[in-house]
Image 1: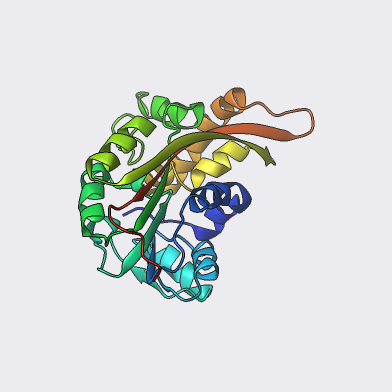
Image 2 (image 1 turned 90 degrees about the horizontal axis):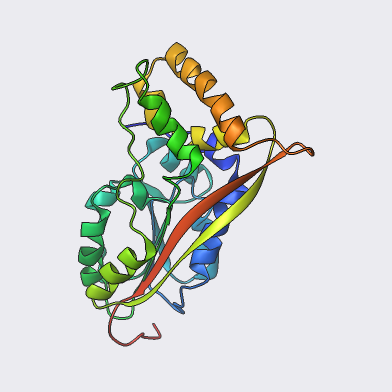
Length: 259
């Protein structure tokens, strides 16, 4: 399993957190009994769930020991667990999974199972990056196909992310009320090689895990000028970084109870 670096991930916290808040705004639960942050990361956004629903039991799960440790340092009682093996309890009224399921190849098969196990009137909210075709990701794949790097790494993300109609159809077929959309955020990033720094905490994790330290440094050195060309530095020293994300909120069939 590749390692996560919570500090590096949080270096772009302001930008990464915005999709979470946009997703949560479409969840209409009033008095949920149990709220699950599925793939909680360092726990900084789990606290938002606890603040919104102070009477609920808030559960945080992540498969990264580093992220779970970081969440616990924030006072979140996070649990180490595999998202693919998780299942809801009968009291689970809200599930939020933010920027997680693109790392779970079989999540389209898991979603109907999870919805079927949730109680009537429960909310399931997901957000996944839809940026696999963008230069930030395509240039990594292109470099990995070159003779020097071919066969050294198998990228983990991007292949199972559906388009918005795909999620809409999948969730509706499970009998849920559906709200699905996509947004392309245009982030204004600061500093040298900001897109390289951004993907270093996510997309490049399997590359770093597969290569020794000198080779990983060389890979980044070869990738950096390609990213600079695709995302040029502006005269004021900032860089525009367009990032597409896909959102889906499902409401399970049956009455929404005031619990």
